[in-house]
Image (cartoon, rainbow, N blue to C red; front, side):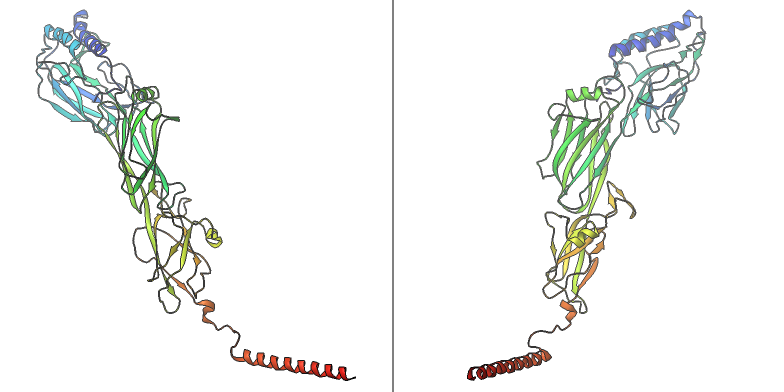
Length: 482
């Protein structure tokens, strides 16, 4: 790949390199400077971050500079001496000018052709961002970044002469040269936003955020790949640069599984999309992938980001969402016998549970029935203490307390008088709670027609009624005889 963020033209590179070499060589003659001494030299490489907030520093002249941008540790540099050029002679310097015109940092051989390269020496920048090569021979060297941390865009290889003519004291050579190749940092992250999703069957959105490398030049590629977990079903993708919603097929090409399936999603920017990135280096790219939770579990979703230039693909730390299981056992109070046929729903608040409204739908279901063993298994509720890719405390607004309400009691039993609160924190299928139901009226005897003393009262009432009727009949007859 090509480091498009720092890509100068070949002609410009040749001119720059040639100018540096000529300045070093002919500055000696113009100022009657001392000749080059055959003594040890050194090269100190200072590695710093380059961004809009930390642009390039002073022009490179071989002297030590004060740089305030963050240092970069762990960048490996490799140097090799160009053995065919003797810089103790004027001809050696003159030959380098011809080489500068052929030098191409983007070519596999750097445009060095048959130039003999000495042994490679590699060093990694320390905690101060410094790699110090000492006890070097006088000569020309090619310097390359051969390993970088994730997210760091390597700088292009460059040629350097040891020594160099001092930029101010033109009668002096610098044998201890300092260089400051800067790197663009390209970061990427992934988050998950569950929002109002609390159960399997509902949707969550995964957001991938990637940097646009700072610098000049054009981009050659920009690819984001997301391999969906098997517990996820694909729904849709949206791509933004800043607040600008990009158009599929115009700004990027999308490869994605069919809706409801899982598999790899690939977003590859087109030429038009790459131009949009080049014009918006101060922004970030956001990819929003909506998926449906298909089954419970701890769901990790990983992303690979391929930025422009020679930076190796970046494996983005996965985002995680967690859905678990909750089981209760329904039994008869007193005997502990399992109860079949009790119907429950799950709610997000005690008041909803008391009112029997807004039950959570879990994979299309809102009611859960105890089996012959009395077990009620509710699978696929989001962990109470996990939200938006991180743990949350009980006093956090994101912490979920669920409420279990009985919406239908088994025949011959009373409903629960109040909902039960619970939490979900695992996929363990063990019994989390035992819920007891009492028989109707707690098995207290209710007086009914035909029972005990009630019959006596009824019989007495019938006799009195009949007696009353006899009185009425007698009175009726007497009245008729008068």
